[in-house]
Image (cartoon, rainbow, N blue to C red; front, side, top):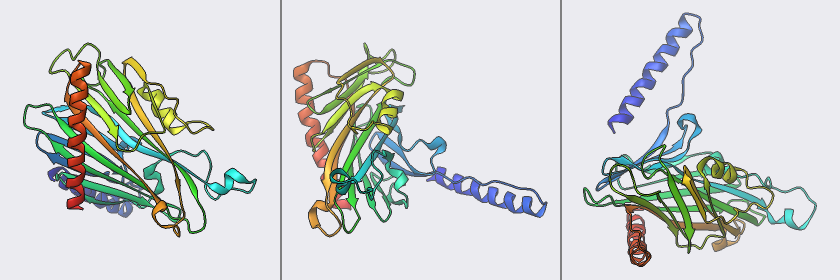
Length: 311
């Protein structure tokens, strides 16, 4: 909260400077202040930029667990085009093959954050609405364990059409800090990222991403290349289902394809994907990983119930 106050105070100073510049007959420029959801619970904090982000980098940009940041960026992209376009030569109501970060929908509205365990952001216009909700469940101090539950919902706001929707999720973790070498793997609908050979300093920690809704497609790759692919998946709109990448600066992504009815068609109007992301001590043995993953699913479900009771 202190950081937000300082930012706002700085903005007032800039505004005052702009007035002085106008009095002196010179031009002055003000810059928008980033809008963030700042979550905190147990041994963990998460910072999510949702509007006016520095350098245009949206989404989760910091996940600090027991004093170490393990996250470079996580966020959501989408693509929609109307069913009419698939079955006729008529111009589509929505632009085909245009994949965009969900923040480009516009009209952001936030709730929560400010150092609490939950927060959400909604973007909406006359055609589409998207909401991302977060619940952070930190572990005990020194456990190197933390869970972030995410719900992303995309709603068709058009009154007279059906649309196809692709939702893309991107996760770029740095398990031993920026510049160190990680490996990424997707198996059984779970994306795992950990340092190649363990971290040179500190505990060996890994990240996991898994969803209640089975993904239609997935990918792992160099972080920059995968981010470019999520932004530009090509005419098929599908991720290539590559399951292993690294060692290097790697990332993972999931894709869900759905069919959303119009605003007049009731329950099919909205598609919601539930994700659980975890920072945890590395568990290399396959049998231990299976048991560990089962426990994480239970934790993720508990976190989602906690968010729904608050919302």
